[in-house]
Amino acid sequence: MSSALALPPAGPSVTEAPFASPAGRTWTDETVLAETTAIADGPLGAAASKIDHGAYPLDIMGRLGDAGALGVHLDRHGARVGLAIAAMQAASRACGATGFLMWCHDVCGLYLERSGNPALSGAFLDDHVAGRTFGGTALSNPMKAFAGIEPILLRARRVPGGYRVSGMLPWVSHIGAGQYCGAIAGVLGAGDAISHEIMFLLRCDRAELRPCPHFSGMEGTSTWGVRLDEYFVGQDDLIADPARPFIGGIRGAFILLQCGMGLGVAEGSLDAMLAVEETLGHVNQFLDDRPDTVAAELAELRARVMRLAETPYDGSTDYLIDVLDARAQTTELALRASQSALLHQGARGYLMSAAPQRRVREAHFVAIVTPAIKHLRWEMARLSREVLPSGTGVGGRA
Image (tube, rainbow, N blue to C red; front, top):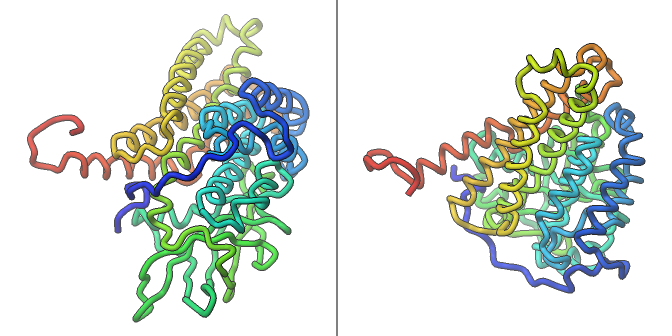
């Protein structure tokens, strides 16, 4: 099965009134980043431990929406994907779980805007962008299914006026009563073979939400199992039919936005190292991944991500490989930096309430959330083989 990550891009969408917020405020780059940083350094930082253990920070998400941090990546607000990544980094520096919620919310907004469906891309999207309503993404299983890693779990049948969808997703984040998410189902045709896929807005009040087992962290992401039984999808909730060309068009932005999480977790880990440098630097000098090393790698990687963010809808294979690699590199840096921060702080960093201990678990989440680091490497290997078939006798990418 061919991967959604290698599909051709969808057509461009129309840019409407960039930089103007739904409430009439002006979301400049400077104000968005300043307000997001103030939220991260203030209420978010104070609540990070509670969020890690189960507090779902919708109040803080609402404040981030008001600041513009949840909408500036959209075409109608300037397509400032780099700014959205920087805002996510600022939040993730204080709390990785909230950075992940921002990503869930951001990509859901991307689905709504690029759907071309007036029922989803007008006032409904304005409320979403401003943090007045909340929604996430249920694409973990479909992205792996499109890559041939696992079967698609939601199945749809065509009925008068739309589709009926049934199936179970084991975990979907940033959802709850009154919320929604983007989801994909395989359409059953003749002989119950899947003819194509549809993408739709799944409204949680019409679904059965089941509690998930306790995770080792990130409990404040409101993650649930979702069961659908003959769930009706009408035209007003249809995002894409077929879904694969649509996913092919947003795949770069979908993956690139996640870099904000890894960059932020790495930066928060760097903060923890520097916090003990004066008192423990004489012995910490013998550790690997020292603050100066991590800081230099972080700056270089952030600059690379920001360059890629200038063309988030580039449909070339080379660009996608670069995005996949940047996402993998941010994950690897977050893993190394978080472990080093714990070692730099020693016993004080190993306390259950300590930020470095939380950072280790946040970094591992960045490494396993779809696309996981093994999925990223799988895709890079497959795409590289397609660019340069075996037997050409030529090294490097074509």
